[in-house]
Length: 339
Image (tube, rainbow, N blue to C red):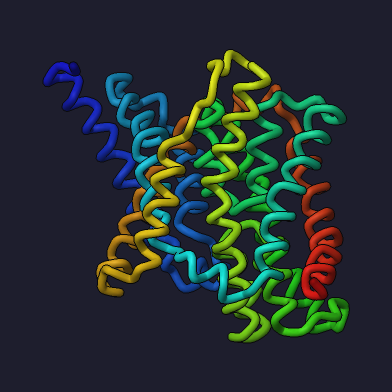
């Protein structure tokens, strides 16, 4: 049990993170930032990193547990609440094509990324996995969800999120330009599946789809949500696989990420549409705040010194996955549409 003083210090750390998170949300609502489709999660980690490399040394050491609590406990709860953003009906709305593309992209991209990251670039296991899941599933949220499962260091997650920011933002502008230039011969429905199945962040998907048409945007968001739903089964499979490998002191036996299971249960509950739309909206807004807190705290644990041994290799890996998602994702989409 924590003493009264320790609880107070932890609370102080939590409040500091919460204030930074609120600032990130306000900044993300500025017209200029909003037009660029930068989510509060991305703004939060940027603010956190700036703080970590400027004023962090002035933070009382006793407050650090509050920051760590945000990167772990609050993160898990936020991932569970993320289930209120999707329903199982989303899967059936886009048919078998969207499901095939989502499953193939998630597991295909992870396999390619892990092998290239560990075998060619000689990245450590955690950095390779986090960088790859950021590209294969749903950007920053997937990185955050995976970190506690593999027990990775926060700065490695920050590196992975950085690659998501770079290539997710690039994709958001590139896809609409390529489509309008006639370089992507797909129907609006096909383009929506392609965007939702291959672009990193949910916000990036919304931006790219909306830049083409409401029809494309709607399909893209649904397919993206299917990829988001893959977080839970993916993490369970990942936990079983790592336990079997016995890498990096992973506990023997099956380690089930229960927050991922609860995420699926919440999504199932949300599928019955039992709560008023307004209440679900409030929950999602609160969840965005919690995710922003987790991202901000992640940034606050990231200093320049921790990047020295990482170098450019994660960016090289993310770039290769970016190219794979563009071209491999296109052909997977074409095949799925003919299924």
